[in-house]
Image 1: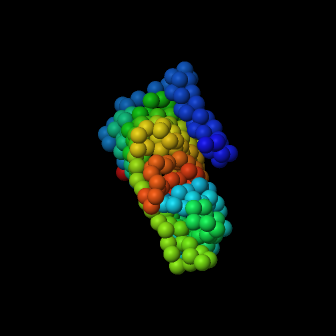
Image 2: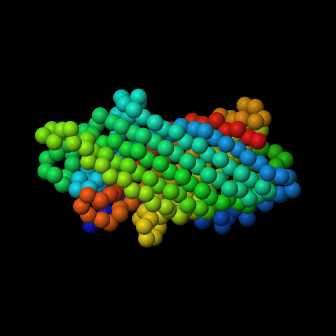
Image 3: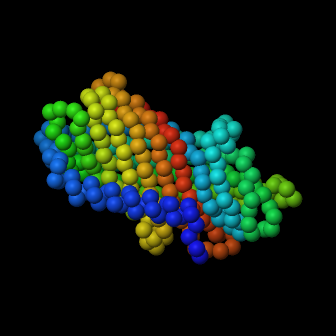
Length: 278
């Protein structure tokens, strides 16, 4: 099957993420001094509840139906009372080693009507329930001198992401009143890196990216994620975070009939969080 333009763009982004991760790992020792674990005694924890408002641009398969969904922010805002976007991130660090857990639950409804293929000329309204749980081990391998700002910190990480997607199509027209739905879950291995730039004691910029799936059995053919934002430490024990995040996955359970399921597309949108340090 010929590759579509969205698939080509997604694969190009994945190549750039992987190239950036490899580049950071290779050049960091040349220009950045290693962080000293002695400067960070004991355990350090942080917890960030946040919301991530997502738009969807994807080709989906639900049983015998195929559809292309392009739910913009305006579509989602019109149904904001039906939208749930809850998430949280926990990190535990000891010395230069860290453990990270990130969980997200999104319920996205839209009044947008999409054209389906598989049951003739039938339109439908899509509805999604999506969950992610990421777990990773990170290593703060290098950082610039801690005596002045700006400081640069680079943390590669390795882990996995649990994905759960529930997709429903509420049929319209002659089939109105019927709903076709299906769900699936899978776990993708992932490798990534996070870079932070401490501009001052209270302001920092951050970005992270990872790539996963790799077409391994029962995993996505490809997945990648990019998140970037700004952090304001307004008191010693809390900071406000604002940013934007993209997540792409290309998953197909390679079955037919009512159990057929596929999602090939991108979730993206702004996020807002509050981090507590203890």
